[in-house]
Amino acid sequence: MGIVKKIEYDSGVEGKSLVVLGAVHGNEKCGTQAILRMAKELDNGCLKLKHGTLVMVPITNQKAYNQNVRFVDRNLNRQLHPSHQGKGYEDQINSELCAILESTDVLLDLHSYASQGGPFIFLGGGNQAENDFAKALGVNDFVYGWQEAFGNANTQVDPYESMGTTEYTRYVGGIGVTLECGHHYNDDAPDVGYKAIINALVHLQMLEGEGSFIKDDYRCVHMKLAFYKEKAGKLAKQWKHYDSVKKGQVLAEYEDDKKIVAPEDGYIILPKLDAEIGKEWFFFGVGSEFPD
Ligand SMILES: [Zn+2]
Image 1: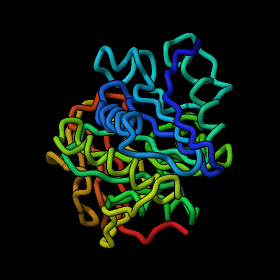
Image 2: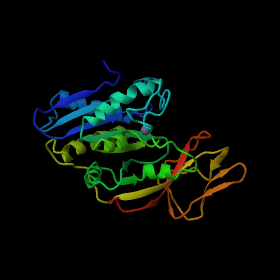
Image 3: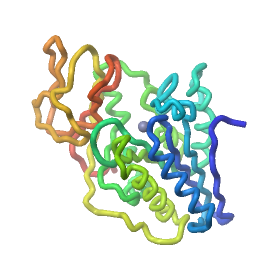
Image 4: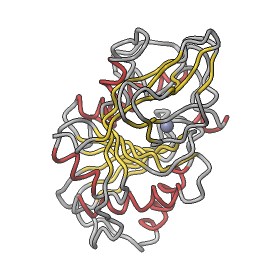
């Protein structure tokens, strides 16, 4: 018996396989609620799969979920790879989670975040099928360039550092996106997640119906830089996710007066007001078309 508990629905008819993950980070519980609502509707017959297989993991990181923390020993959504060796709790989840991702075609990973802001989707780069899937989920804001941003970080980052659930899915030939359903405590976050599951199933022709939540006014940001907090300091203001900034504007300031300024006009991505020294602080990106 593994430690990752999954719920599986097989339509018995050929089609795509979709995996939906909740609580990869233990304190991000909107995905769990969204998945359990979906499971209830499939169990009571309100909804019925017409094609393919749906796999859902309501709580991917159970121990962190129980403690209401992001992770126990290490961030499960970094350095996710079967070759990863370690003795921590998340290291035990690693290979089981990778096996699930290897066995499915498409991943929808439901998260929430600590900055103030609304829902958005992390895209990979330049996969049309993945872009189309992401655009069908009912969310307007998109960010891509995660791995590139880590490559341009202001500190040396392990090459596997940026490999999380979606990166591993792409690595093994699937498509996948992370949906950040909003701030951890946004009331509508579970609903954003639930609607995205429905829309995903409709888009993949696994469920009868229409994706009724699709909008056209998309915004896309290309992430360029990851900033780690090197020493004592603070953000120049209480940034919100997706705040726009001008070239030369001060983004953060260290106590020794060293400043981080915007290299060009762009956007603040996922600012952490209370980041610890040595940890991810915020990201910087520029407005963009969808990656192609
Ligand atoms: Zn998360």
